[in-house]
Length: 79
Image (cartoon, rainbow, N blue to C red):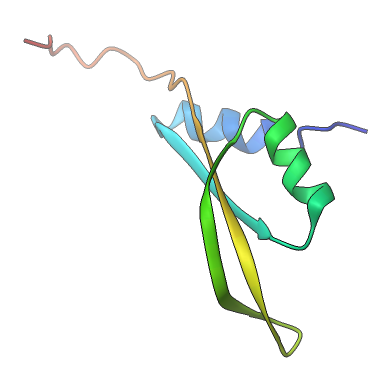
């Protein structure tokens, strides 16, 4: 079992030139938050009581990860 279930998605994002991946997880789910931490994501904040899940209001943690896009050279040079 992979501890980084986002690897396939991250590769697709990188191929399309996406610079940063974002995700949210239930704040009460310590295991899911650890998966993102171990996967190289950085904690960015807490969204307090902002999500309804199964009729309950829950807080969510926000995580981000800088990606390394693999975009073909466009022919333009940076200044």
